[in-house]
Image (cartoon, rainbow, N blue to C red; front, side, top):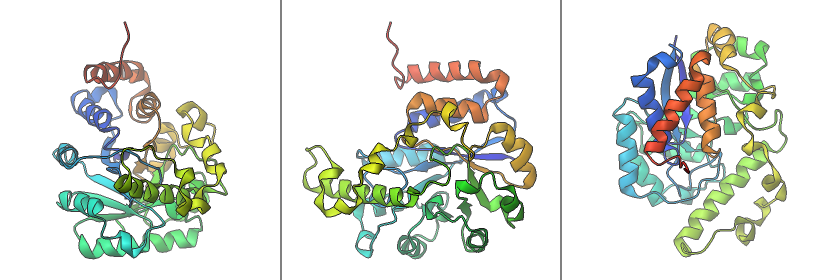
Length: 319
């Protein structure tokens, strides 16, 4: 059985992920023998369908085509994080999001969904896409999780509050259809997580609207009156998303590389998501080394990856 990893962000972290995948191909001896890259997930901003993490910036059509081709040529699908929970019917015909879907509509790429409205639209309009059920749905009830697995999803991302509840995990009927988020940065049993997802969805909508009207001006979500109900300061004071690998290791939801191979894979799980679309580059590299490089090879593998990223000007070195 392969440990199938889903890596964060094909736009912001394009060079990192592409270089890392090349390294896996050229220097496999540095990594666990069972490592396989199952997908790279994320979004091309400023897609209003995006959810889970706010994404700023603006990707041009040529870059989008380049990224799709680069990963697909290696047999790796892109998975679009179209999990905005606040979407309405008027948002379904967004030109930018539909352009992305048309460009990547080759039978290889996938979509992660949380909104029933968007899911129905994609199933009808773009039937070639495999559909993943998002962890943003916050399904923590075991019976409801079983019901979700019985639906027509390629993968169901399990809520990470269930990561260490082995009595629940053991009873899941279709474990290979489940994806476990191994390095969740959010507090276990967080009471505001669903509200935070709605806040992020509103911010993404407001940002796209802002770019259409005043692209030259700085964007400040807290001053957008239309979405004032979503601007609770508690979300901007949350420091969870900035946690390092070394901080999340102490959380009960954390899944270590040893546990992946000693507990979860023997149970039948083989899909593992690494969170990190908005975390700092060196922190994300540390996660890659931790989960996919052999412990005795991590230092050298990290150094070689740094060298490649310096050559590509992704990491700047001062002399």
